[in-house]
Amino acid sequence: MTRPTLALLCLLLTGACAVNTSTGPVHDPYENFNRGVYRFNDALDRAVLVPLAKGYRYVTPDFIELGVTNFFGNIDDVTSVINALLQGKFKQAGSDAARVVVNTTSGMGGFIDAASKVGLPKHNESFGQTLGYWGVGEGPFLMLPFYGPNHTRSTAGLFPDSTVFSPKWWLVDDAPTNLGLTALEVTSLRARLLSAGNLLNSAALDPYLMLRDFWVQRERRLTFDGQRPVAIGTAGGDDELDELDAFDELDELDELDELDELDELDELDELDELDELDELDELDRLDALD
Image 1 (cartoon, rainbow, N blue to C red):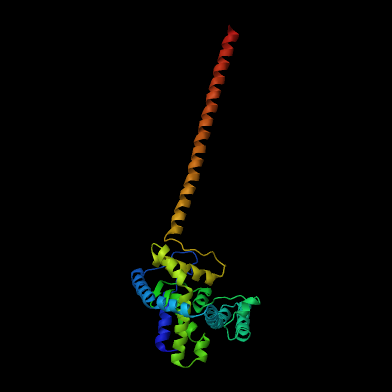
Image 2 (tube, rainbow, N blue to C red):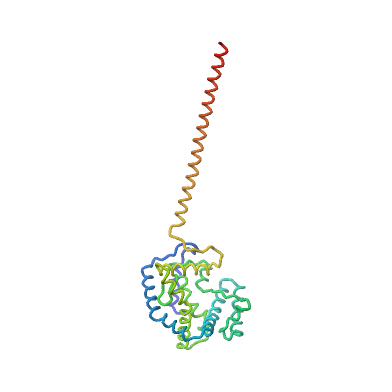
């Protein structure tokens, strides 16, 4: 790993050293920059990737398209095994390793997902999630050119996941072949997401915010694996609730004050009754004298 790469990783991890929240708001201090990158990615997507993906779906039979998806999924399973081991999820790592063996052999090199048919579920683990598992915070949200939504923690994980944790880095030395595999993987992924892209652009008043929040919530869900509740909070939400709780305490005090006032009234009523009894006693004495 080169010194510039190490420096970049250190910088990204430093930026991610924040609270490792699962329900807080998205930290997006670079929103103007991120929106600019989003517009660039969206224009590139419309001009290049969408036509390419539509052409790929048109000329590729469904079973081959599914096979390509399974092939790259099998490669991703190797990355998941390594990250599961780094997170101490040894049972899951064993299951994912078994998936790789079954799909590589019985699944014809990964083109058939035979592992799912024998009860070996697929998991998605990345080095960014591994960092989150060990307490590294998300850091600011980043919209990266070509890569799309990320935050600083997941950005720090892109390099190891695409190099030392990936079989493509070990097995494919030829740069053009590696580039061709990457292009095929991106095209296959974009073809699967054609419907999702149409839904995003047609349903959302602000596609950038919808994509950002959806991605962050999904990343939190994958990182915490159900160990914490996951949501996208609002800035200052907890403080506002705390202030409302303080008002509740004041309301309780007000109720007590009202009860105290009623008790005082009850005491006055008792005094009034005593006065009436005294008056009756005096009348009885007068009657006796008569």
